[in-house]
Picture 1 (cartoon, rainbow, N blue to C red):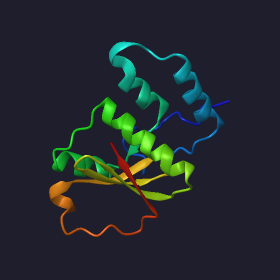
Picture 2: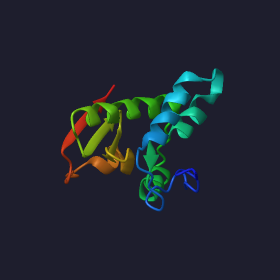
Picture 3: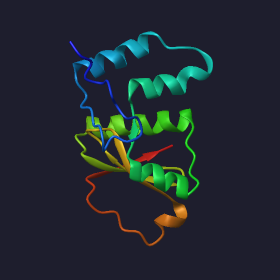
Length: 133
């Protein structure tokens, strides 16, 4: 049997979107059981595929100088979990001075902007908003 996740192009989910299947859920479960210590938490998060960034979102983060560390990514992933639990499809996630539009079912950040880019901006096509502490 072939692995449905082979060939996954990390960071470019628009080119290779993998639905959360039983295999993915099993990988998430296994990652929780074998939590590494120290600086491997970020690698574990990537391996577990808890949050993805579209190519567009990666470009916006880079252009706007937005850097997200493991703790921030974890907090944002938790916010996406909360939105998912409420049945959200497309959510505005506000984390400090960063706003992100996230497609909740695919757990993909579609775009991101800093507080300067948010001024006079109208967010459309969202069904929820999550404020992250």
